[in-house]
Length: 322
Image 1 (cartoon, rainbow, N blue to C red):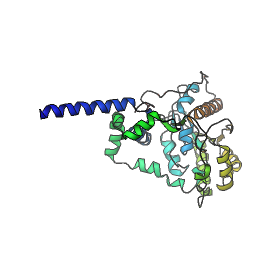
Image 2: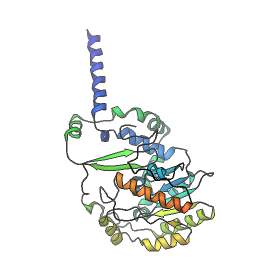
Image 3: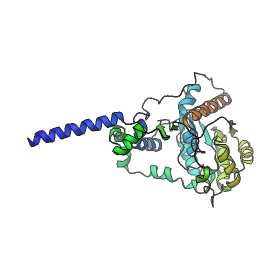
């Protein structure tokens, strides 16, 4: 009798786990997928033709999937990190991911924040890089199978299913891109949360000089260097102009003299879900524009398919699971 009860309890528990895993919204399946994403991005030894480097506006704003719709056959990695920088460390790590026999292109996502001393700590990258071997193995090989066991609560479960309030959604892609959006879409919140980002943390002339020196060195070595300023909301652009100490026009001129190619992107027409980062649809639009500009500069053949939202590539961490 006791054995039957234990068996029945196990069957019921297993059934509930499977049902919750199947029924709960995709946005709740993020813990395991996110672990896999950052570990793969940091520790994969794959090589690429094009590597983007920058902060969260880069990793949320550039979709290699959308770019390869136009630049077909070109391997592209989004190597941006949260609060990431254009420090010597990150520039060197970006170069290491280039295929020596490939096209060898590095694209800098230039934001005022990415050139500040605080960003140059590169805390997220260092945290991921310094994970133990056991953590790396678990995140790479076990996390994709643990999606159904990501923690939740009954209250959160039913809130996600029944609520009509705007909720933040994310999708993690093997290319290094994180798509973000709100459901339903709505205006960004207060910009006040960003007001202190540049307090005692203005743009560092040393970091700027290092970027320009590295650009010049890469150009001599035959590595093509592009740069762009990821679009954001007009309010955020104004805040950065007032507080960051970043002179975009001067940087652009010096970058061009160092051998780099500045990519002009329109500032209008994009939608930010939080004043800082582009939503999924705007990121795809921006990525196609950047792909076209870079492709024409390189003399690459371009393809212009129907501009539908991209689907995750095979092996990617999909919106519906790892």
